[in-house]
Length: 104
Image (cartoon, rainbow, N blue to C red):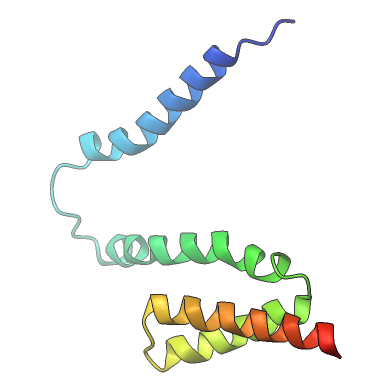
């Protein structure tokens, strides 16, 4: 069986386009159902968390550095620090943990 990369790319593009275009064509008016509105409100946050959390634990060389950055990031978010500030703070925590582990 011969593999055709162009066919794979075309199918992936079509599926991606349908996922984005179909809701716009099917849902014309404002969504009024309170449960559905609250569900759709949290979708971007959940998606970001699901994509980010595994990387937090697997990207650093030391799992402890990732866990420490995660805990510090949650505390900073709880205090109202901006997203960019949390990212810089978490990177600094991982850097300090991994640098300290080298010298210990």
